[in-house]
Image (tube, rainbow, N blue to C red; front, side):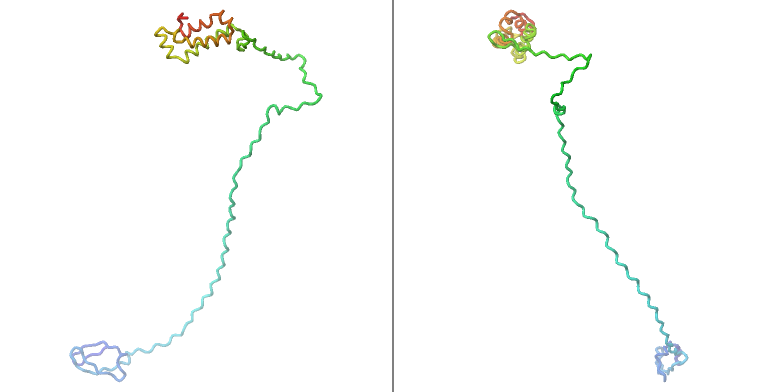
Length: 220
């Protein structure tokens, strides 16, 4: 409510709830005049009527949560056993695959008109050379031709094993003296293989010395 000072006409705003029923004396803060203040009944607010209590509806209980079933556990993984490759079966030999012989059975006969296979002739043993020694088997068919080949082979070995010695001896003209020992050993082996008669009656060994060791010159 509004209260006006009767001395200086200053208006003050006063809460009617703080003014007693029989009134109160107040001092003006402007002119310090003292004047009575009574409560305005019209301005006093009426007590508030009690509000009826409204009960809130109780919410229905929440439905129980169904327990989740545990996830099925994966089956245990068993360790894989090592793969063992199959052992290869041994193949039977060609001889074992032939059918067994039947007692009393006749051997297979050639068909009429078929050409019979030639029967290989047995090889004749080599004839012994002079002095009781056996001659090389490859000389039994053509002694002269084989003696020439043997002579050339023996002289070629001297060139293969002593290339530098042969080169130096050809330049110095001492091939016969430088290879005297090798020529003697090769001649002995030549006579032993072809026989003394054939070795001395043919010029195969001398020809091989001149052609191969002497580089085509008539040195021996």
